[in-house]
Image 1 (cartoon, rainbow, N blue to C red):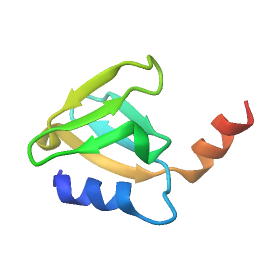
Image 2 (image 1 turned 45 degrees about the vertical axis):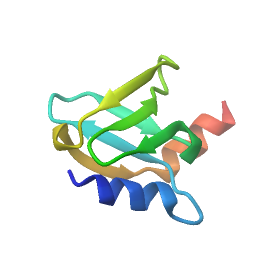
Image 3 (image 1 turned 90 degrees about the vertical axis):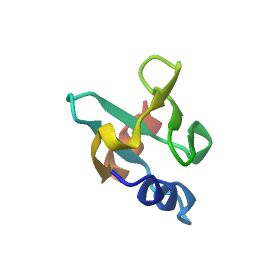
Length: 77
């Protein structure tokens, strides 16, 4: 996936939560723009499940899905 596409999603106003799906099947939910940084060759994010930082290679990301419903569910917990 193109890092610019992810950067655009992070900069969108208002921000809309999204899920990044990796080629290997792992998923990373991005609930807030302060939890992700997009560089030219890497993406750094805080994993929602483990609360740990992780570097991702953009070319290993298979898809990105805007996921407002999931964000609402997590906020209500």
